[in-house]
Length: 206
Length: 350
Image (cartoon, rainbow over all chains, first blue to last red; front, side, top):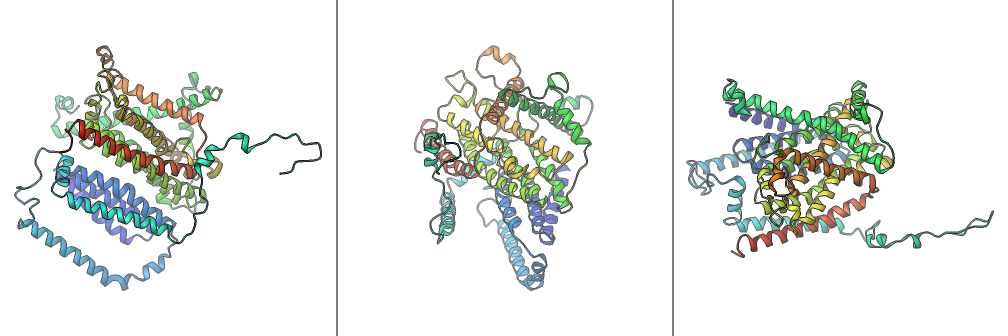
């Protein structure tokens, strides 16, 4: 009973807040709605018993990715009217992408139903071992069967990260305003200050 | 607690519902009281180190000072700047406060005395504490004012940076305890050091991590010396500048509830939570929650001690410490500890 109510609550909230992401006038509000929909998606994950994925969703998407979104959107000076203007022009493309995504989901569910994916079948055979916790089940799959895919994903991320760092430093010349920390730490009062007793009415030479 | 309500003649669902509500109240109300008193403690410790008297007028020894302050802000008018984004402006302090409270749902106060005994308790705390940044960022933006905005920019960068190292430190502890479940982590610390010290602190490999965790906790809760988000000399009062009355008080309460949470987390991860400090029979006569509160109080004293002692960091120093010192160090510890466990516990290379 409460399970059903919770499911429909979370599902309705995901869809409603996802709609609001698009319809909100202010981009910052859009990001806030996006965060709400992430949250409710995490709630759905908890409902199907994937609490580890739910926590990761909150940590990674809400705690880090959405903060960066918010960061960028807040700093941008966006002309809302101009942003609205492109709506009708971009509509066909958006619909096309939505259709492709829908087709992919249908295809995925269809393949799952026919048992073409060996990960888990609808009747439960080949699913993760019962009794093992989420983390153990994911870990035992990720580090045995999918270890190469897992490491490939890691390497792709590493390359992306290095690429971003390289692009940031490209062509900016020597970095300005850089602090030499060890020099700052080595500095002692004796080298930085001096005691003088200037004559009256003379002042000191700097 | 559900069984108790069931014995009063309720059905299981109602008993569960009432027990959960009672549990929430049982945690949240004492927590609010603790926050009020801990603010008093904070001011007293700070005053003592500065050779001042501190609050000593309201009530015996000034004990009621926080309540007087609370009443004062309660009676004030909530001022909303006309240029502010009203909805978000009002939601921001609520987010800070709520997020600070919900993390306490998984904190075990004694063996079994926990509201939500979930498997991924530590991840839950990590997830919730990573949400704390939203209250600050939204308030800074919604105020539509320069200083709060600077402050929220600083807060976002600062909290994300230190979460990374906190995450790696948590991974180390989890590797050693072999669980994300908070009570299991505490149990794993029983007699950990030389057979009688309860706590990972006695472990030479985890000992340095305690200091990194403590410093990261200071940065995560924006306490001195990392209180750049509310640096009075630069940003007036940071993201709280435009807030008044209860919305300001909610920030305040949330901030201190977060500090208590970080103290509790330090106690759980490194000092054996509700276990007594030594694995010695007579010490177990004292109930677990007393040990837990004593530990929280001790770490809070350390927080105040630091606040009264050290000057504020520069922002570039803060970022350097986070990314160039703590991140590589904690990553190194993850590698070292997992390697050590691989060789000692899991019998070398498989």
